[in-house]
Length: 164
Image 1 (cartoon, one colour):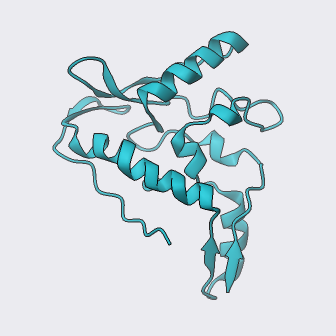
Image 2 (cartoon, helix red, strand yellow):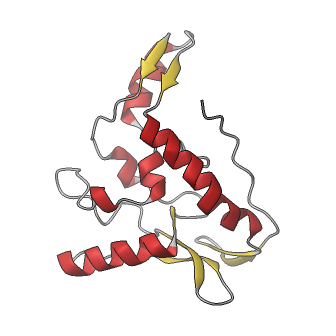
Image 3 (cartoon, one colour):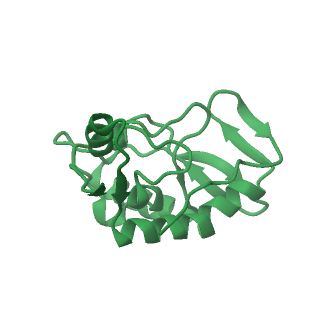
């Protein structure tokens, strides 16, 4: 059975941005764009360094559990500026959870096998993530772990995702 993915626009995915160790990664360019938007609209946006660079920061992370850009109606105030990881959700390599659409359809379907078809834009965002964000995380030695502070490590596990 094939199921076309359709975002329900419930905002659930925007309420769980922090995992066990790290927040949602955003690039320096995304961080600047979102910071400017937040300043213009009076939104408290406080990302922290995830991966430091020799000159500047290589990757930032969202540190608030709920996205600062989610309004009271569970709508994204910066939808046209949303980061790469938001554009690819729920195709995220480290935490595919809190997707109401998938929870609703996949839980009902067990034990029937369902293939979910994701939109082309979402699949393109995954490919971009794999070329922009994943290499930075994979190659970094130091990352800021939200639970333990700066952590020296040799590698982030590689994403195992097949795009069709």
